[in-house]
Length: 512
Picture (cartoon, rainbow, N blue to C red):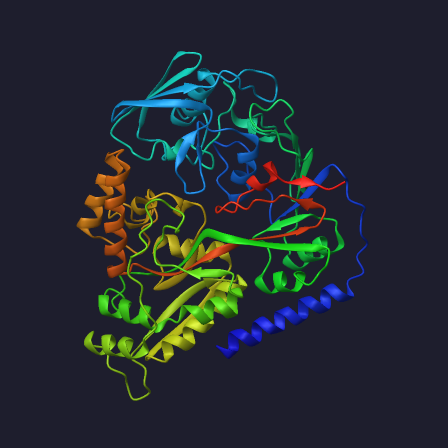
């Protein structure tokens, strides 16, 4: 661990020196505009197309969905005031009568039908087409009633109609809609400049509670140190989950800045390739789990801004199993399991060699370096190979790896993720079962959970899945990252959601 600690302290000192000696000039902030730092421009503000984090989070401010996710990811009425499920393949939604798009046009069932028809028909090239494949067709029998007809029971329909999944667009919106999006949400689009900013302003005719902030400018700042400087000199107001832990600790000393933290849902994991001749052995996977000491990793790499994880699902999720198995740090037990698996240590103490692929992202490479030390203590020689993210991710999605670490951001907030990452029919390129894990019990439980709307029955299925996969270890659970917001004192009333999205802008206010 001293290696990780030394690196972290060095980064902290470097940043502190940079901040102290920076001579950047401050600009007087606009009293009506909050400036939020983002790392990159959204790829497309059409909610049917954009799937990157910036697109989806800004879209949640511009567009309304049929249903809304509460703090525990239960679903409640939104554009749809109510719905009925007369049979497992029919959902009838009743819409509000007081909702208008930003151009003054009323939002009706025709708009809802068009939003999904344009995806399903192929009129619009959308990465979300496969998501809505279970939908057979949609009827709009009157202006405020929408009927979804499914090909088969699909319990995740409501989740995939909620905010964060998709928003409703006006009837007829097609390819170029993302360049000037028109929604019905609490903010409306003003302008966008690639790699520079996105500007939105308050919708003064919003059907719900209007935001207190008149205008928001999302400023694109790719460099982490520059983000810190912008906050320090007051030319930006807010950054969420875009600063390193050492940067946060440094900025915490600034009198004009406030640091807020809240438990988040971003999940970090270590994936193991079960087709590998070494990692296919269950005892080997369990030995690796026992050899990893998560607590010092959280302390040194994340400065205690994370919590140990025991499931892909976050604790805020209704289907989360708090009793799913945890592997205690136990090097002696790890060595025993490796002996039992038929991998005794050689004359040099090494049992076998593994390769962990990483991106060039700093915290991931530091994680790999610490894992290298911890695994060597039980006789596993871990080699680290770092690549630019595109190359790294390409290898991961093709299964060309032994071990890697990534995060689930948002996708793990619904148990539908189990089909995506653990079902035996979800091997790449179809979905993301990149560990090539297969267990008929898990497949059956996934099918059962997707075919019923009985939440207690689904919860029982998903608890069993968590227990089985924690025994089998296609993933080794590492931690859930906290949501960390750093903001100036001129902005207040920031309520951090567990998803780490931009919902806080709906309630925040600027001090005059």
